[in-house]
Length: 455
Image (cartoon, rainbow, N blue to C red; front, side):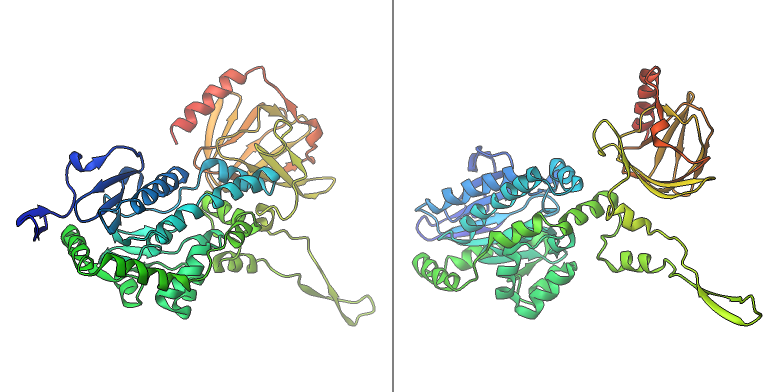
């Protein structure tokens, strides 16, 4: 533990706070501590990776307003706890659900309130008249990196990593765009924001994003030394110079942040994150789409014996396009209008019907029979659970199951993710003739619950 000689008391005093006597228990996400030399605001949920959510913003806002009213100290240390500083923003389940449901007035209202909620704390941190030090005890991602940047000084452990993650999800985070260039320069800022690449703390130090590095074992002592170095200068001088420096910084505009949060790219980013697949704009997704063959030109002899060329254009589908729901589904579940399952008709002739189906994770179609069709279902993505006349089977991508005509069955997705299938029926499947049967609902429900519990 680092000790500092207090010239007034002529005794050794502890600089880094320790023990419950220094803690004021007003918060759940953070702790607020004071020593004679500094205020210490600590992210206090290491078991939850110190994730950033609305309650954390509320508590940080309160803590930094409280700090600015402290007349006895002139330094605030903002630090993490545990092995990492913060895993970044916590994408709440209700926001993810609304994003996947598409643009609605409810979704726009939610995203406006969610994004606008962040800016008071951004301003409270950056405008704090005290000197603020971000003490980064481990890796930090996304929203956590924004909070770090808003502090005056940054010290971090050498083995940590940083990532500006929001653009990967389709978000234009205004504080990143407005503050990063002032620290690292325009070109480096664009490189970090336009690639969302992960960087080491050592690289962050080399480009000027981080002021000092330290070894993990020396973290507390190194932070304490930084506080002592800052205390060599006048609090008034630091406050006035901070005002001059910050006066010319760009405005952190909520407008662009909100525009991106309700845009199609954010919804696509959430979909990609939820399913573990590449977003449509990534090189991997583009390459996958480009593998679909173009219509070919076939050569055939003409009836008069000469050569002729004719263009043959086969009917083709890009499953990723359907998955992104570029086209509205042709059939949806009657209970919720598409929140359980959806179907796209791909082809239908007198002999066969081909469809593309989607079942949302943890849901099922409901027990039913097809009195007019014998069908084969191929799993494209996800893990499917199929109940057929008392037998439960689990299917993975590449598996195909035959469901004969008239057999009572129920098709579902496990709790890990959505299921996407290609289904072929012969004779052609008529959705209007799906015969739903609830007579064995309790038996089937228990079978699915048991199977999902074993996922």
